[in-house]
Image (cartoon, rainbow, N blue to C red; front, side, top):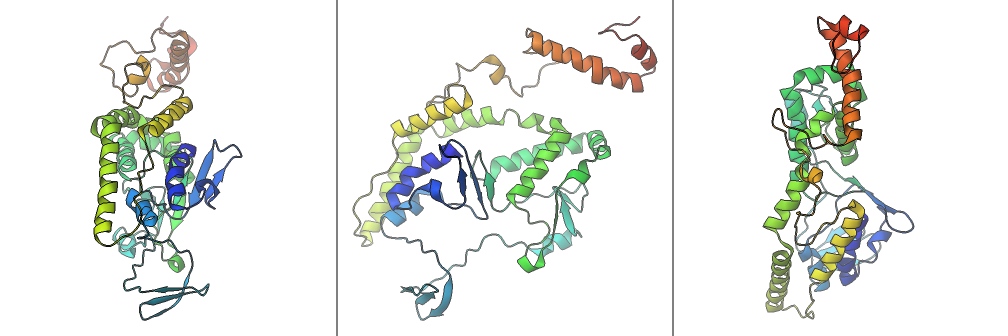
Length: 349
């Protein structure tokens, strides 16, 4: 989150938006190394939005509308906005009660319609409540959501296990709020995050197929959008917008693109310090340790695991076998009583 705000600083300064760290929804520590952004809406990140402000094509006015007159908006602070011929009401997401009726549900329990784990429902949750940002789109989160819930459908006995342990009772519940025009299925980010964390806590295996996502995204982004090509493209489009507006009569001075390769390289270096591993601007990964590249890879049956030569890891595996595994065999296997009375690591009397 802190790095995101630092990257926004040049664009906010360009258009006179002030210090992004001072906005009411930003909660940061005194040295601005940690931050949490909590709000009911999303903030704009498109270049063209900031460029339009810089060129006088767009103005942000924060107020409430008192009344409308012909081509004029009268605001509660006394200001008048004139020559207004179009009004677009962009009030965020308004849910459709048909979704609740379709599922014949009165509430959401976690991500489940009326608490039925077989009926999973996801929306692009409203608002923002985050200290870390993976993306500003719904695609990556949707993929992870699908893979996690598919695991329980592929392994229903795992669901039976966590259900007996009280999983459903621990999930957040969201009921319809008619006065706010919010059906039951419309949940916010905080609710969705809570449901996901509880699910992962009860069954960590639901996340196993998502473990390689960060590595895949790193390589994919650098292959599809290398920094040089990205900068070249955004600068070209930035200038094309200005040329188009100039042809339409815009008299604003030329506005140079506020980011350079050197600035982006600095962001990568700062990110590397936070991660504890060097992340290069050119996307190379040949310096990464083998265990990082192996995260999430499914081993072939019989292959030696990457941690086989680490005493600490071997000790943890032995402890798991001597406790959880032995407990299972003691209760489920015919020779369980023999294992319990003659406990030996991989040994039988």
